[in-house]
Amino acid sequence: MPAPEQDIFQGMRTRCDQTPAWRALQVHFEQAGKHLDVRDAFAADPSRYQAFSQEAPHVFADLSRNRIDASTEALLFDLARQCGLEQQRHAMWTGQAINTTEQRAVLHHLLRQPAGVAADSNAPPLVAQAQGDVHTTLHAMLAYADSVRQDARITDIVSIGIGGSGLGPSMAVTALEEHWQSGQRVHFVSNVDGLELGSLLRRLRPESTLFLIASKTFTTAETMVNAHAARDWFLAHGGSTDTQAALPLARHFVALTTNVDAARGFGITTTFGFWDWVGGRFSLWSAIGLPIAVAVGSKVFCQLLAGAHAMDTHFYSAPLEHNLPVRLGLLDVWYRNFHSFSSRCIAPYSHGLRRLSAYLQQLEMESNGKGVDWRGQALPYATAPAVWGEPGTNGQHAFFQMIHQGQDIIPVEFIVLRQGGRDLPEQHPRLVANALAQAQALMLGRPSCCGHRHFSGNRPSTVLVLERLDATSLGALLALYEHRIFVSGALWGINSFDQWGVELGKQLASNLEPRLASGDVQGLDAATAGLLQRLRAGVT
Ligand SMILES: O=P(O)(O)OC[C@H]1O[C@](O)(CO)[C@@H](O)[C@@H]1O
Image (cartoon, rainbow, N blue to C red):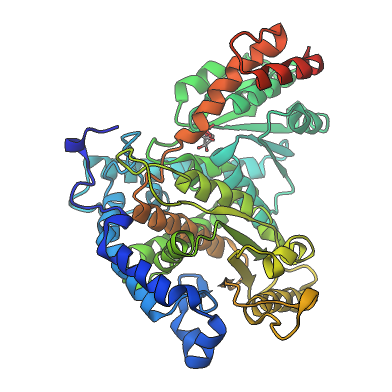
C-alpha cells in the first residue's frame, strides 16, 4: 500500500460517508426516500418519464420506475461532487496510477480511442506511448484475424482463458452471432474440469484447429493446465515443436498476453500483447478480443470499439446531471447504502445477450466487491450488490416469482432491443411486450387483491433500450457498465481495479492439490482434512 504522503488521491477524493451530502441523504431517506411510491410520483408529475429518461450514445435509459425523485438525484449529484468524482474520472483519463495497490494506470478507454487524438497535456508520457502501441497492436491483430478467417484450412478456433480472458470474448461472440460469416467455429474453454476441453478435443483435428491462449499473466493455473493439455493433445496427434515440421505448434498456437517470455517458453512464437494498464475484466477491447475479431471480422470489431468510444466520450464530457453512467452509478449507491438492496437482476430480453449476466458478474463484483477503502481502512457500509440474471423471457418462468412477491426488493434492469434479429422477426413484438409487462407489473402491482394474488408493486426497475443488437450498440452498452461501476467505486472510496480477494483461494488450491495425491492432511483444519480424505479416492 502507498504511504499516506504518496496518496495520489490526496485532496481529490473524499469517502462518501465523510461528506455533508451523505448526511443529507440519510435525512432525506428517513423523511421521504424510503416512503417514495413510484405510482404516486407518476400521479404527481406527468413529466416523470421524460425527467428520468436519459439519452446516451446508442443506449436510451428509462429510470422513471426507480425509487428516486428530483431531490434524491440532486443530493446524489452533490455527493458525487463532494466525493471528487470528476477529479477521479480525470485522473483515470489522464493515466494517473489510480490502481494504487498495483501502482498501475487504468486506461482501457485508450483501447477504443481513434488514432490521432492528442494526449492530455497533464498526462504522463506513458499515455502518448500507450496510444501508439494500441494502434500498432490493433492493426497487427486485426490483420491476423482476417487472415485466419480466410484460411480454409482452419475450421475451429479454441480460445483458452478464464475470468476476464474468457467471459468478455465469449459473451461478445455469442451476442454478435449474426456476424459470423466465415463458417469457422469459435469455442471457449475456461474450466479446469477436463470435461470442457476433453469433450471438445474429441471433435477436433489438430491440422484444422487454431488455439488462442488468452491470459494476461500467462500464469493462471486453470488456463495453463488447459493450455498444456491442448499442447499435449496436439503433439500426440502429429504436431511438432519443430517450426519446419508439417504440423508445427508455432502455427497452431497463438498467445494473447502481457507475458511474452512465458508464451515463448511454451513454444509460441506469435503473440499479441497488451499492457499492465488494462485490467483483466476490462480487456476484451485489447488482444484478448482476438477471438471476437476472428469470429466477426476486423470491420465489425472496429464497430464494437467505436460504440464503446462514443460512450467514453459521453461519460467524460456530459454534465453529471445528464450523464448516463453517472446517473446509474449514483442509483446503485442509493439502493445499496440507503435502501439496503443487496442484489440487482440483469434481464436482457435478447437471446444474443444470454452471457451478459455472467460477464457483468465479474465486471461489477470483482471490481466493487471490496471491504476497505483505497487506504486499506475498513468500510462501515456495503459495496457491490450481487449481480445475477438470465435472459427474458426465460427468467419469468424461473425466478421472477420472487422478484414480484418475495420479501426482498430486487431492482431489475431490463435490456430491450427496438429491432429484433433476422430470425423469426415476427416473434420480436412478443418479446418486447413481455419486457414491458414485467416492468409494468413490478411497478403497478395488484394491491387490491389479497392473499396469494396480492402484488405490492412499487418494485423498482430500469429499462435500457438499444436500437438493435449490433457491434456498435454492444460496445456502448459494455462501456456504460464499465463507467457506471467506476462511479459507484469512486464514491465508495475503493480500488475498483484490483482483485486481492481471489488470491487466497488460488494459494490454498495449489497447497491442496499435491495433498490429494499424497493423502497428507497434516496441519489442515478438520473439515478440509475430512473432505480431502473422502475425495481423494476419486483422484488417485
Ligand atoms: O488473464 P489471466 O492472467 O489468466 O487472469 C484471468 C483472471 O484471473 C483473475 O486475475 C482473478 O480471477 C481475473 O481478474 C482475471 O480476469
